[in-house]
Image 1: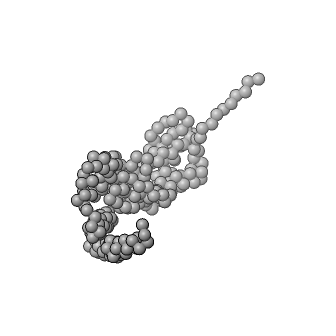
Image 2 (image 1 turned 180 degrees about the vertical axis):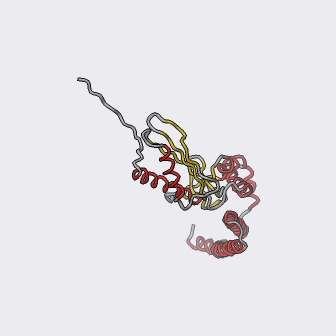
Image 3 (image 1 turned 90 degrees about the horizontal axis):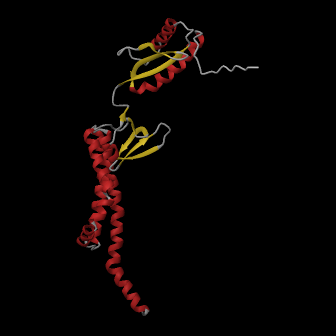
Length: 269
């Protein structure tokens, strides 16, 4: 094909679709900037109205995806892309697409179910299956958990809405249960008095409901004392660790022996 014909075709393309392509890309670039600002202002408005953080983050993601999809549909129409033909193509492959998107649609619906029944909210510490962590965000398709060692876990909303989970933050109070084993040679009344004294000196332990200290088992080589105390949910691990540490220190001071597995070996000559 002669060069002049190629040049003519190229100039014709530039003056027709080429210009529309450049304008369309420019509109997409500017539109994405505007959408970002609009969504930001929308989120700020929700925060000023004291809308729940969980709902705010979900609406933020939903508004962003919706506005971007609307923008691209407008640009496709401007580029004279036959949306009816695209719709026919989608319809013809509807079964395959439906199967492919089945999981995504389930996760999308699961997000709405979570917002509706509120089994947890942003900031709660939950456990589901083998995963547990603090809820960072409930997105359109996935919920983000942050573990105690700062790992990010993405869990499909469909699995969360249909499966079982434990919400450790749902209740204001939690009970700390610990068992301490002592030797049969120890005075059980003395042991009980020491445990009660330790409990009374803890700052975060609640007086209502009251604590429990008592013998719960006569083991093969030890007597087991169970301690049950109540605290606010956010102080659970503080109390848990403090009791373990303080009991060991006090038992050593009070000469209360803690038995441990041992084996006697007899050698016959």
